[in-house]
Image 1 (cartoon, rainbow, N blue to C red):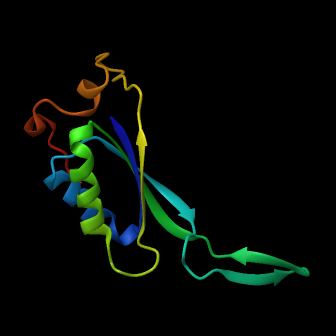
Image 2 (image 1 turned 180 degrees about the horizontal axis):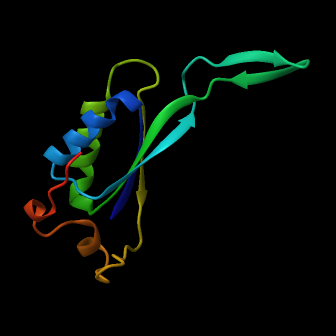
Amino acid sequence: MKLITAIVRPEKVNDVLAALFEADVRGLTVSPARGHGGETEEVETYRGTKVMMGLVEKVRIEIGVSDHFESRAVEAIVESARTGEVGDGKIFITDVSQVVRIRSGERDTDAVTPVNPEAHMLSY
């Protein structure tokens, strides 16, 4: 099992969610994020001290998937989030040792992959 964490541009979130839905990837968390990577950093002077300004608004998407969904989820994110410009984001893939669905007590792959994707229709 994997935890896929994607940091993407806010204007690309709907495209990413639609691409994940089309790839039958279900169950995700979306939260706001701020940071910087390769974007140009602004440095200003405040009371004689140089201060880095302008953390960039981003969106963090976290998805728990079984191993066979990893490549399709990553490909969906890359294809839908890419603009070709600096600041498109990153994808981090982490091994997960255990998952438990609180509602049912299901564990591991049963807790991250729907048995019947049509039964889990989501609207974005």
